[in-house]
Amino acid sequence: MTLSWDLLISTAGGVTATVVGVIAGGVIGRRGQHQQWLQGTQTAAYEKFLQAFGAVEAELREAFLDERRPAVDWVPFVAAQHSVSLVADPATSAAAERVCEILEDFTILFHGRQPTDIEELRPIHTALGEAHLSFVNAARCSLAPSQRRLDRSLGGPSPWRGVESFYTRPDRSLD
Image (cartoon, rainbow, N blue to C red; front, top):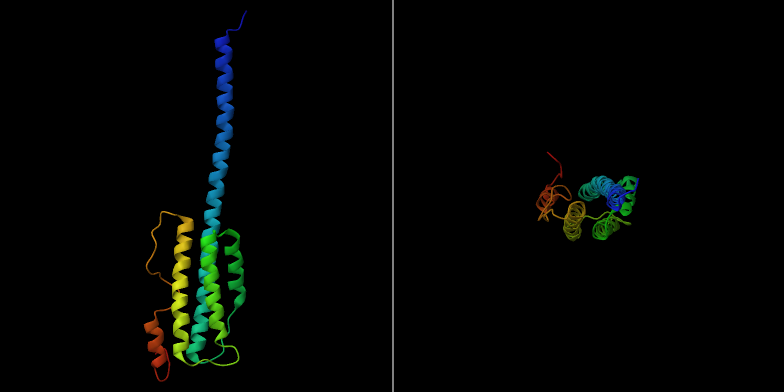
């Protein structure tokens, strides 16, 4: 009984194609799982950062408007920074760093004094709004490059007209 070369070549080709298919499927599957894990982890880190930023910004703003020292809980914000630094792409990391720099400028207003001049707050408030939007857009792009950039976003610093309106009230009450 002799083996036909045609049968041997077709069998070897079938085995080779199967092995290559299994290896390629494993590589593609692993890559897809990694991308899915990274996107989920990035989403959670960006969300945590935005929540912590919101809490810090709101406390600093309220302390300024109430003419009191801020009582910021920095632990969640620092933890959120670490989370972002682990998974962010360079553009999102740079945008997060800009937010942190402006928050530092805001805290410097309180060093050794109680700021009361609303015009000191205006440039910081404006820069925070711009930095917040830049972070949101960078994060959106890193999660799905096909997402269009936003011109404005929900969350972040309140509109300046609201800050100014509150500041000009004689009693500065929320009522």
